[in-house]
Length: 300
Image (cartoon, rainbow, N blue to C red):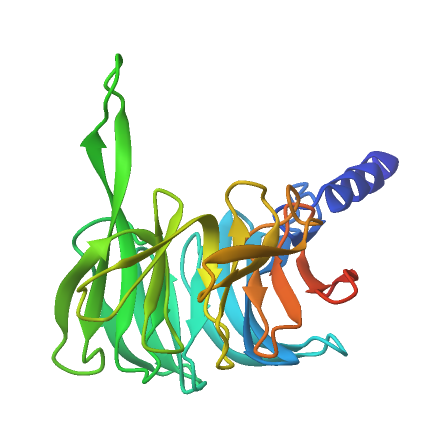
């Protein structure tokens, strides 16, 4: 029995789930806990620091306690600092720091909670249009944009349902909130600059916050991101090649920066200095990638 227990622990630790380190001890009626923990959803707050969610789940004598810890991680030393905890059942969070670092938006159970960096909840955004698939802050930290899908009947022989996305803007998020439909689109990003960028049928667009005169770039992209510095580029993955690169907004052209993450990694997030990417990985853990050298390392 002892040898079997050791083999079971080793096998489970080697498997890994969605970037998580896994430690498990079977309960043979003695109340030994099942323990699971892992990091995900990394987001930059400076050139050398990220925020991430650290999920911890402990089951003992049939009772499970889930909690998510919002942690700050130094990418050079890999050291962590706890900011605050969120408890609940079956936690699956997505976080987005505000552009000036004053607040943290946390998507949980299709509601966006707005917190200060000490963990005090200040406000809540509750959509009634559908499940939020992407969201972001305005540059002045007073607005939130989000994209939700709805089903519509498709075309063709079998008339299968397809999903169309709508983007909404919520103003005065810490007070008497007001909501406006902007455009149809998904993968919405804002944070810096005057324009909101998004994709529609994988094509890159931008629009001002009044929703008027959307502009198409004629480029197929995923996951657009506006850089913090004032530059004529939008960074994204090409929907055609899968390569990560940047869109020259003046020339309306795509320049590939690396092809290493064509199949392996998830949604990339660009550092403020535009030199590094961080993301979850289906290989496991949180990974850091240097664009200039194409070096990569797992930091959690």
